[in-house]
Length: 224
Image (tube, rainbow, N blue to C red; front, top):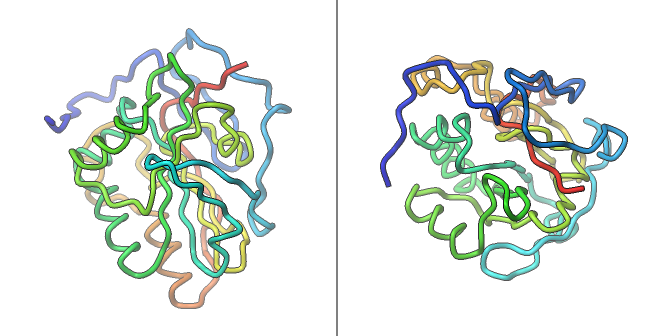
């Protein structure tokens, strides 16, 4: 699978930036698809109990947040065709994060929430092939494209949109992967990686210093 190279900051009609703190999308181009009104999405709050969920993974196993109590959990909302997602997978930035932290006992859940017929929708077989071909290392890939229960519970707005839940079940981080809101692969180097920073602080028994940051990426498509 050829790794994409991003030489231009131009993005497609299906991409947008979003402000993680307010979870408000800032469209960079007209969007040809719709999203539910903000009232239809839950507002998961940092430093509050993380919304419970149960979802099937790409191998048919049910994954529930309740079963993961006592572990740090990362939620990575994804769309493999999104240029912002490709930026982090094409440079192995996402895979390196996954591998570094799962080796330390963190549960990393990659969540594919695109509904059928929309960019980023995957079958279980496609999800497993993407994991293999990209040398990814999540604990599991959750398929959330049916009723989009997990995405709605957390108010996921873009891909990648990142959330971290501590061992006590509290949501302690929500926002972007880093501070470089572009689709350029070259911008990975030198970026401040908020997810890595938050996980490092948690592993040291410290509070997360930046619990809410600006999320950026391609807009999550919600079915009506």
